[in-house]
Structure formats: C-alpha cells, structure tokens
Image 1 (spheres, rainbow, N blue to C red):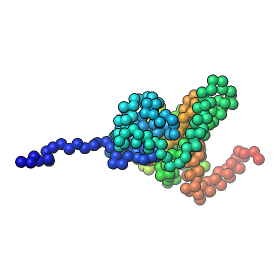
Image 2 (image 1 turned 30 degrees about the vertical axis):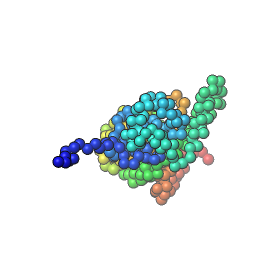
Image 3 (image 1 turned 90 degrees about the vertical axis):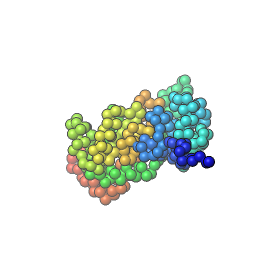
Image 4 (image 1 turned 90 degrees about the horizontal axis):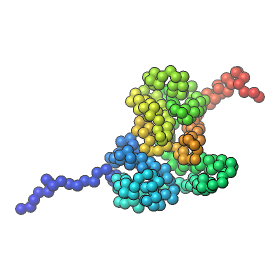
Length: 314
C-alpha cells in the first residue's frame, strides 16, 4: 500500500524573492519595496539597517571581504550570510557580485580615495582639510548621479507640479534645506510653504491642506522622530509624501509615494547637507521644466515685482 503524500508537510522556502537582484540598483529598489511592505521579502529592522549601510559602501574595498564588511556595518559574518540568503542569494559571493554591478561608472570612488588619503595624513594643512571636505561633497553628488532613479525622481516632480499646495518640512539643519526648497519652488508657483515656519502649529497647517496636496519631508540618520511623525500623519491624511533622505531603509520611505536618496558621507562635524542642496536645485529646475509656460509667467512677474520694489541695485 502506498502512503499518501497529501498529508506530508511541504517545506517551502519563505522570505526569498524568485530572482534576486543582479545589480546595486536592483538591491536598492528591493530595499525600498521591503521598507514599504510591497514585497514578500521580509527583513527585520536590524537586517534592513545593515543592508542600507552595505548599499552605502558602493565601490568600497570593504565589500571585498565578508569579515571586513561585517566589521564596517557593526555586525558579524554569519548575519551577512543570512541576509544574503534571505535576499535570495545562494551565498555571500553571489550577493557580493551584485553589490559590485552598477549601470554607471563610479567617479565618486576617486574622490573618496583622495579624501581618505587626506584624512589619514597627520599633518594636514588648512588647504588639505578644505580639499578633503570638498572632495567628499563631490563624491556625494557623484553618488547621487550614479544611483539616480529616474522613475522615482520623475514621480516626485509630477506630484509637485500637479499638487494644489506644497509644504516642506525639516528640522535643525534640514530646516534650511526646507526653506531653500520652498524659496526655489515659489519662484515657479505661489502655493508653497515651509511647514510651521510661523510656529502656527504643525497639526493646524497639515489639517488645512487637502487630499493629494504634497508634503516634502527631509531627514537622515539618526532620523528625527518629529519628521517621521509628520510623514506618517501626512500620509494618513491623504497627502502625497515625498521623502528626501539617505537610505532605502529610511523610516520616511514607508510613508512616501516617492523617495529621493542622497549620499552625505563626509568628515564634516555634523550631517553634511551640501549634496542635499544640489539635489534641491535639481528638483526646482525639473519642476520648472515640467511647467514651462507657468514658470515663464511666474518669473516675469517676479522680476517685475523686484523692479518695482527697487530690491536690486543696478
């Protein structure tokens, strides 16, 4: 008599994509999907954090050894191995291969090596320290271009261009970014504001916005709890949230309709935001290009007001 196999438990591999990503860009996209809960792949908070840190090491020699990599991200080799398998790779080697495959060259690696050389110098001059920081900022901007996601960026631009109203929120250093972004967008359209700029209350200002208006939030690790809360509440109230942040596992990504990732690795004493201002200029120009006629009219009107108010000399 043959035993029926219907009652036998079937071992099914859980938590693994059918085909793991074959490139760095694919891994970053997968991490965004994991963070938003839009894939069957599930990673815990620590694993997501580790993967985000690994993706930040694009082109780094630390990726050549699982031991060095584990030390770099503050974990152990067995954790890296489990992470690779959870992502669908047979072993670390296959995962490592995908980390080194990118659609674009990596000029930022040159600047990074130059900066590291300067950093290791014990007798730096003022010029060397300035050069180091500038090279690091160049590398961060290069990484933005290298990892540029056209679909996500264009989605953000369309959301801004078609929104009834736009508000921008960031605190501490990123308050200045919010102010700059709002200023640039107001050259194109008048209905842009910095959230709670006049201390009228975040809840009151968000409550005054309509569904499908846009809320742009900006923060990087260690992420500001207040910014995360604003992103969540804005999303729950039907606003379209755009996150300007650093990693695909950023808590802002979960609540966003579009995310723009910006590298900020540097020897600056705090979070460097130079690259974020460069990206803000890209956003402003892209919105202007998306609405050329409205932009032309708005800029002409602005110039006329400047002339009437005698703001500029000469």
